[in-house]
Image (cartoon, rainbow, N blue to C red; front, side):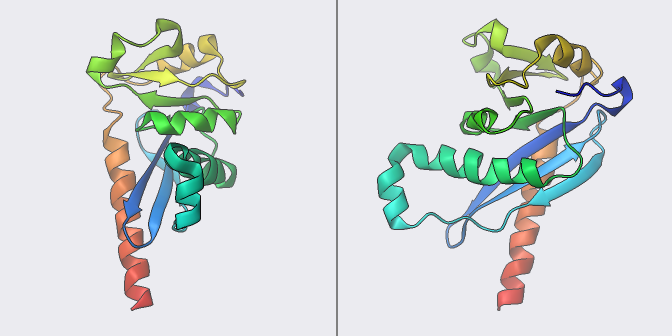
Length: 176
């Protein structure tokens, strides 16, 4: 993991929305430490067919979200984040596919159950970090202290979801 300067610590916010007709659309917003956008990328819809649903079973959703959508977005993004945050634990599998630390925001009720060695306080949240080669606790800990303590890490996910919904709306209107 390149540590970069303290002033350029970047967070990636990765999420996906599901459209019943078109499947999953994922988005990755990279922000500076104050939550200001630096770059946004989104995927085309990914809709598993019935055979894939049967064959992948309960592993389908993590496969689509992490391997297909997440990996594609991290590879495509020009401004690389120092850590990628996901809304769900399903996105932690992305850590197997990229060399950037991947973490999932923990609900307040989940924090006490998590292994402290796998967690990190960032802003007002605690995150669970996936095990991968990019996970350097000391560097991440130092950089994450640059994030204001009262930073709401859930709010950027709302921005990503709204941008994805707008993208879907625009593409639907073009198809009509």
